[in-house]
Amino acid sequence: MHVVSVVGASDAGKTTVVEALVDRLAERGSVGTIKHLTHDPDVDTDGKDTARHRAAGADETYGLVDDAHDALDVDGSDAGGGDATVASGGEWFATGRDLSLPDALDRLAPRHDYAVVEGYSGSSLPKVALGERDVADPLLERASGPDALDFDAVVDAIDDLEPHRTLESLVADVKASPRAERSGAIATFTGRVRAKEDPDDAPTEYLEFEKYDGVAEDRLRALREDLESRDGVLDVRLHHRTGVLEAGDDIVFVVVLAGHRREAFRAVEDGIDRLKEEVPLFKKEVTVDDEFWRHDHPDA
Image (cartoon, rainbow, N blue to C red; front, side, top):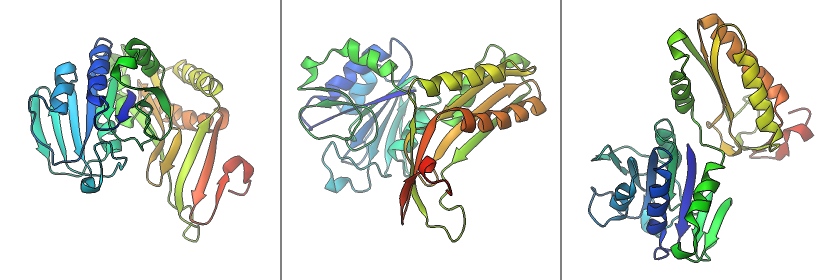
């Protein structure tokens, strides 16, 4: 699922941009949207931003309100948990559970090709920024307003972004394989950010991953093709997240569709071992006491 956020001041025209992007993206696939709210979630109402998302072609829409919404403007950058109102398949319902921006994206990923987020200027999502307000990187495009944007070019740029993957979305991919009818097993591996390796270690605050662009993708593609060439292995998905990941976050996924469990288990184990050895990814660890890149810290 490709994700973009539209950010700017409350009167900058963010919802107009979201509508235009959703309209164009819906021609290419299924679209979910997320709206950052500073008020209690409400049911779908004509003229409201969330209703405009739906009218533009969004298949599913989340309206998220942060716990600290009273202290935020319409484009608040806090991505903490809060209540949510959800529209799916034309029906709206209010949830009573806390739901963060990452949680909402993870829920959209298995079902949609695209997600357009309105707000969250402090997030790590790629952004289309309106006006001169400071926003967190990465910045996909900046314009004075909706009329200054080349929407077709922005949509093409969204298609070039690294997709947001989850274990569930990768499993959904292999289940949709044309070879799935020959499958008797799906095996998976998920690597996570460990808070501590040893009880005496300083707690890990976060890890930051960077990849060698181009080379990393080529190595992943070659590894996938090699695993899929094995007898009994029908389809493989490999994904390693980049950027800042906090303790408890998922880092890497390996998913194997195979005829039998033993073939699946062997391919998963070889897949994660070879991914760590062959794919150029660089990891910085930040603890409460120190920070270091792993390749510069041989004892880590």
